[in-house]
Amino acid sequence: MKTNRAIKQGISRRSFISAGAAATWMLGQPGIATAGRKCNGTVIVVGAGPAGMAAAHLLKQNGVDFQVLEAAPSVGGRIKHNLDFTDFPIPLGAEWVHGEPEILEEIVNDPAVEITTRLGSYEPGVKSAYFEDGVLEMYFDSAFQSDLKFIDSSWLQFFSRYILPGILDRITYNSQVMAIDYSGERIQVTDAAGTIRSADKVVVTAPIKILQRSDIDFIPALPESKTRVIENAKIWSGLKVFLEFDHQFYPTFLSFSDSETRDGQRLYYDAAYGQYTTKNILGLFAVGMQAERYQALSDKDLLQQILRELDEVFDGVATRSYLQHVVQNWNDDPYAGAAYLADVEDLSTSRVLSKSVDERVYFAGEAYTNFDDWGGVHAATRSAADAVNELLS
Ligand SMILES: Cc1cc2nc3c(=O)[nH]c(=O)nc-3n(C[C@H](O)[C@H](O)[C@H](O)COP(=O)(O)OP(=O)(O)OC[C@H]3O[C@@H](n4cnc5c(N)ncnc54)[C@H](O)[C@@H]3O)c2cc1C
Image 1 (cartoon, rainbow, N blue to C red):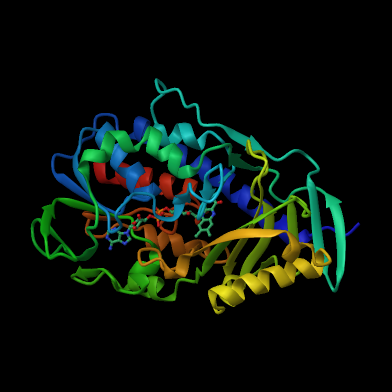
Image 2 (cartoon, protein in one colour; image 1 turned 90 degrees about the vertical axis):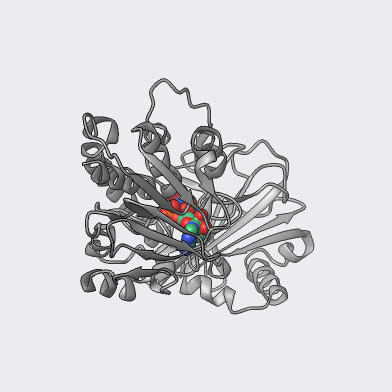
């Protein structure tokens, strides 16, 4: 039986690097490393996605005066979800918990808090399929064996419940940071409305694409070693589509010869797997070149293309049972601009991106990690812990 070896290799690399990252991070766990340290000044956190919220939460736990400036009218960034499409939260960006479920406890960083968020795993031997040259081959295995899914919840609901209440009053929404001037004694942060706020330290969690597009003006310019890496960083485009059908004709995972390549990834999957629902929701996840092929199409052509692809695999059933769909094109999101730092990037890239500047400007987020893992929420929040830890030292 043919299995999709490429996908498996990709996922096992992810599992391997996650395990390495966990070991690195424990050394920098704020509860341990920050004992006896403090920061007397004020801190501005730029962005309220997972990294920004995790950083703000840790600053609060350590008694630091901080505020968060968020460009969008709400928190979440690339973990945002859709609650209107069906009867469980649709994760428009991050969906799986890669690696260990302990990451939720790590983010909360308080053993007194009982976390009731439910995570589910894939049953061993779930129904998967591989389609190539007109032939559909079924196999019973999952490339996502070590990944977990939120049950009737999402990354955003987890943050909203356990992190957001403690930092809510410090967040200013619709405040897109345009300039960070760290030339003087105090750092001046200017947003799109022209409001200038000052702080002693800044934690930048805006996505790497935002820096690559120079949407934030650093004064003085960031060191050349860092700007070079920002300019050259390979950032994958990203798109997710969720389709509702009147019955389930597809397996848990459907992959193709281009499901895992150096240029990107593409996978159809049962998005309702493990949920308390009778709805039939199929997800399409595409990043890199694979996403760009879909993004080049108009809304109407995109749906036609997807139905055509599925009809080819399932003998026309897709078009006959289609009910509705929703598209999230991350390249069109003004404050993300892309999916995330490519899986195939060099180990050194995220390390350079994570380096603080002038002991006052810190970087945290999925692309700014000083360990051998990037791209995921766990990496973003661990990098936030590292940045806060360094800031407090
Ligand atoms: C299609 C897709 C699927 C994914 N699937 C998974 C998955 O299954 N599991 C997983 O772990 N991860 C997944 N990820 C990655 C995950 O979403 C990211 O790792 C995570 O959201 C990164 O968090 P962050 O805080 O670094 O950035 P973000 O979530 O992007 O948050 C950054 C915040 O900064 C704000 N911002 C931007 N510019 C400015 C500015 N100038 N001023 C102020 N605020 C600003 C943004 O509005 C945003 O709120 C996926 C991502 C995509 C796109």
